[in-house]
Image (cartoon, rainbow, N blue to C red; front, top):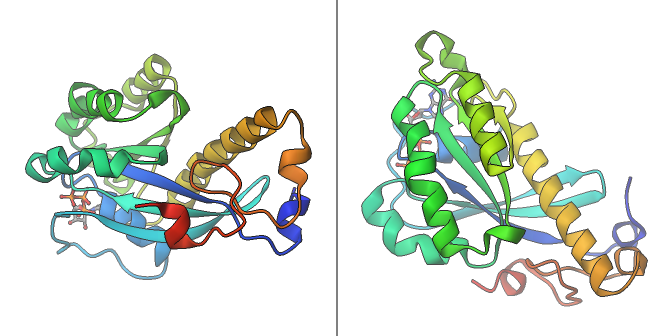
Length: 223
Ligand code: GTP
């Protein structure tokens, strides 16, 4: 279903989402697979050292939206200083672990969830758990049930992906952005006291879901 706001040539809403997880779990590879689906996986990828982001149009049940995807550094020495910037105005987070690396899964509760709660207003941040490298089933160290238990505990959904084969990659980003967009529409509709807000004409939305007629990638980003 497409809202009238988008069929009238309005700019699609732009939301910042953040990739989190240990170094080497495949965050950069997932973003690369999403933005360049036909390019083969690069195994010589160097560790992310600072801040990198890509934008990608994605479909939701309420029309197209633009995701600004921040690929963060998993290495502790980079991540610690950059976390406040990563989370600033973020509306969604993909928590990534490697299904062949138990340590990367344990880090989610030991490290990344704590960081999330310390730096982000967790209540309105949509979250998705992603177990990457599903093509390496023979080397699996993290049973799916363990990940499902984590999801129950922290209230989120999960998908297993492969940045190598492309399996479930688009689905993962679309799932998260769908949750983000629904939350923004609900909040806007509540603020304005009705559905009028999401059916208005020619209105863009800032990253925080509020109205912005001038919204462009850079101005809406505020980063
Ligand atoms: P940092 O930038 O250090 O935080 O790492 P990262 O999480 O961005 O990991 P990156 O994308 O750099 O991937 C690390 C290694 O895993 C690379 O050699 C990738 O080619 C490989 N890799 C990533 N995703 C997959 C996957 O789905 N399957 C397989 N087999 N290898 C993968």
